[in-house]
Image (cartoon, rainbow, N blue to C red; front, top):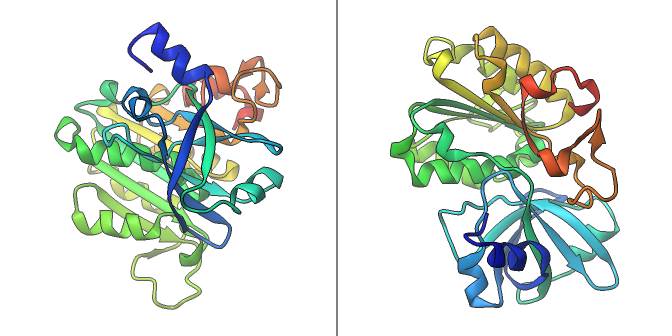
Length: 286
């Protein structure tokens, strides 16, 4: 978070106008947004951790929460991957480069990247889960010497449905992170990587990691969690070393609306990052 209480109040509670620097389509229904605060000092003061989220406001339309997909190691801009799913995102998709969005944040409990130093990491994403985990990956790339073996497994329904496909293919080519891309079905006949469920890639890591010194990070559609966790447990990774981000449950982001409350836990206040050990008995949460 920010360095002082005053700065925290500024960044968290006061809405800031941000200019759209770039927009591009990631898939047919999901779009990349790159923003920069119009107040130059705010760009320096805006501190966050991978896994946190921001609230967007559009006058006359409303508010919505979105996970950061950029890394705090690269300052002066923030990035998002946003899927069009309702009236707010429909209005958002009508904006163009140079337009302004009001933002505030960051919110939520993100990943403590410093605590992961020196560890083997298995990062598994599926679908929209690639958005917050891209932040983790970019952070690691920029500070690669701080981490041990890092494996990134990303799944999508088909090549055209893979978010950040261009970015992840480039990541695979850079070979800084051991990257494995998978699609359930190859409808192009030209996909050069894995075809099948992303869970099929996990058992291959068993001989490459030290399970006691391994942290797994997961984000994806609800059905994915059950099967990914099963495979990770087979590798003897402790339950408290399996981290998941449950950002899909967010709405107001501040614990007011109750949309994210499950089993007495507020995802937006206590999460969105949880360990599997913490939530294993709250079935509705995952």
